[in-house]
Image (cartoon, rainbow, N blue to C red; front, top):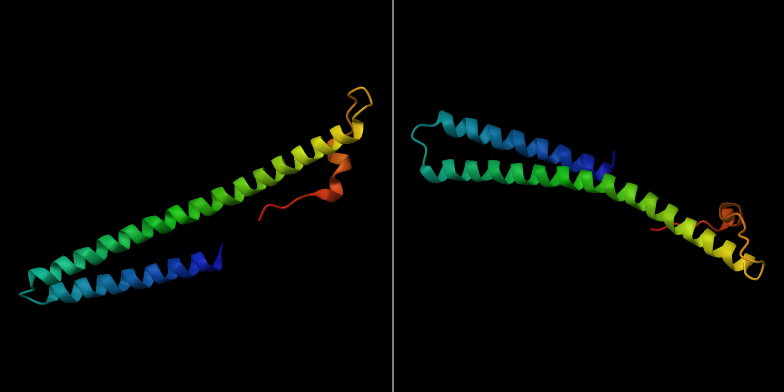
Length: 110
């Protein structure tokens, strides 16, 4: 897994523990102000939103990696097909094996 994502997950766990500890301390105190309870609820909501965004981010990274590989493949297939067409031009439409001709011309999409 990506080290940056692992750091984010670890930070979210630390924040969750901090929020839960703060909530437990607040519940142990009586009376507790309404503002304090609202603040803890706000922290919980913000944590949940952040966690869901991290899940989205991880899914998007997986999707982007797959799309990148597919794009590179499509790019190289088109390049190979065009190279084969250019080399066979004037030979009555005969096409040269595209993959064989461009094995050394692979292009990476970064």
